[in-house]
Length: 109
Image 1 (cartoon, rainbow, N blue to C red):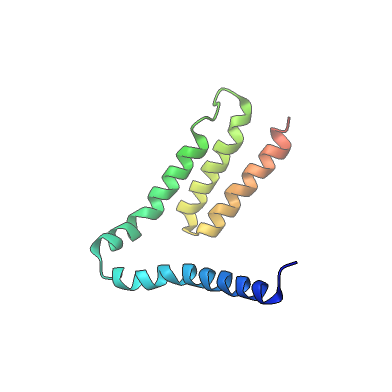
Image 2: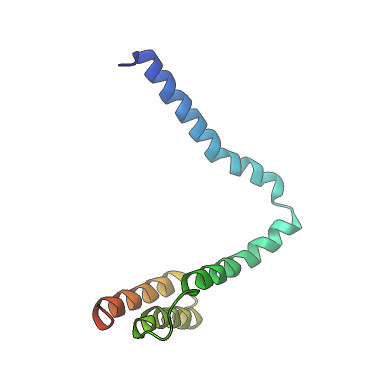
């Protein structure tokens, strides 16, 4: 069993490293706030990330199988809700609920 002072020192070092790693992005962000590149990326990246996620999730979807309708219907519901209400939480919840309901009832194996 390690000595109590060793255990306390290990916990303190781990806490200090954790705190420093969490504070570092905020410290670096201060100097980047005026950057034109960062401003451009902050407006374009959310849509880009969503496109990448959709392509990644659907890239090997077998569209000839009936089960493929569940994720495609969920995607359509998500897009439709977002265009209708412009509410990300509603869109995500609606698309997720659609996929879960279809996958567990209509297209269950």
